Length: 506
Image (cartoon, rainbow, N blue to C red; front, side):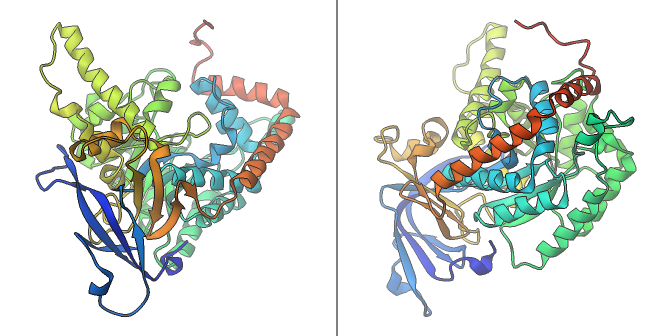
């Protein structure tokens, strides 16, 4: 969806409490408050934030819609800086998987059996879940880029939902099932040299649209599988083409000793790392790597729930805070968890407080008050303006302010877990008490996408049927190649040098 398709009418959102950053707030020490304010939205942009905006005070012709926000909290849309929408189809299938199992079964083996129509329905369902949970912007790490048809099906799905997306097309290698079936010599992966050209082709096409909600990024997970010059050249060409976001997984340390990947990447070229790069799961970075990240203004993304479930250690939130590094939050994979950023915030908050408190316990001391570096404001920032900064979208979204796009979440203040909270406590309640069930409405680019607790424009029963059918098709295709799956598992164990260090089953 482009801005051309957004409503051209003017919209007054009236009578709500608006979450704003305080005048004395800084990025390192953020503070928030709520005020009774109205919003005027014109062509998807917030043009006024002030008390009691009246329809008769507006100049110019054209219809004016008034949206009743009484007893509602108006917040910026939540921003997820690391999610794999394509994995939505595998919900609950992965519940008891380890990281190794997840990588070889889902990311490598089952991904190879997904057809474009499977990706299409999975992307739509994943995007609808985002909107339902108040996520208005997502960095979609798409490492199921098995063919040009696959990536274009994924983008087409996103365009149909109205979700603001940094679609980071993958440079992943797709498993060559036929090579494994016939035991053909050589690496069992299909040629992926087409991906760079296709990414640049899509970027050229998207560049002709008027400020589209879905913009292109690049995931660089194959940087270890080729010469450094290939990665440096790809990033250079993509930057020249106007691509603003690059992302990669950096969980080295979860599967064997860390080989300091940031130092390696920095050695490729002094201009490779920059503020347009997001490193996900970077929980094992050394002090030297943190220094490089800070100096190069590289962004991080923490997904505390999935990182805890998939043996990726504690989220890097505290280290990022201590080193003045921008770190967004994400859900990671909706195959393993539900897609709420409220849960991600609570997990990040609990992890942050645990690390600080544990140091006191070890030292035999007890904190007299909560340290400034472990307060809720940093977490709320990371899910809003910090996420926008990580996604290179801070000029458009991340706060309710004049000039920003109207990506807004309206929460009901009369739900059982929100009633009675004083206005001064509402900002912290977003981290400690709020849930998806509290969300009444969601606007993206000024367009209403959820109202009265229901996502608009989608038949959820029908989508569910299509998603179940898709999973059935994928699993049936894969079941015919059981021996191939065994080969993949052995191959992945060797890739990660895990065949000698697997822990015994408990």
